[in-house]
Image (cartoon, rainbow, N blue to C red; front, side):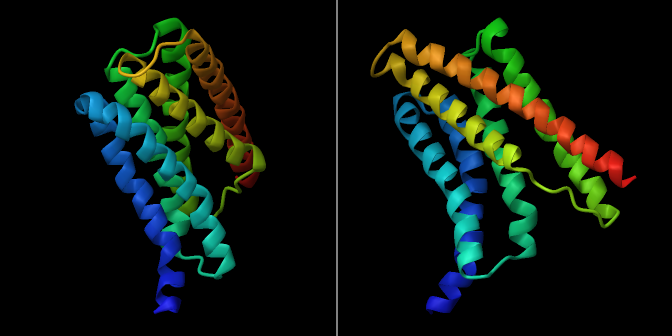
Amino acid sequence: MTKIIQKTLPNILTSFRCISALIVPFLIVYGDEIGAILAPIIFIIACFTDFFDGYFARKYNVVSNYGRIIDPVADKMLVVGTLFALCSENLFNYHYTFIPSFLIIIREIFITGLREQVAKNKKIINVSILAKWKTTIQMTACSSYLILRSHEYFFNTLVIEYICIMLIWLAAFITIITCFDYLKQVWSNL
């Protein structure tokens, strides 16, 4: 039984992140007070699974094709779905937060397509340390906005709003840099 759990745990955690990518936006848009409480909790738990699925896959030596393909897609689904839901609520100020959110969403869609095309040619785009930090900062920015969003129900502070704005711009900046890094890798392999 333990071997089965060890073998499937990384994929279960990745699948949880995929499911969370559907639940969190739904809670943002339709959840009212309950959604304001549950969305950040589920989102933050899902973010931690991004670390633990890789950790357990390496620890138990159970790297799978499912994990290799779905893990980066699950991250993008979670971040992009959350950003779309927050945008749909008009939470984002156009000048301060919509533009970096838009850049993040466009980059994530573009890189997913690029990875798919490169994979068809049996090539691999290596994930850099900066790209891993990019994901962490994107998830931190989304978490901060989910906490900010709950201010209507629990608290109201400008400090969190300023932190959110700085984090989303930092995430967008690193996201664009990593996009160019991926493009250089692809270009050098042509």
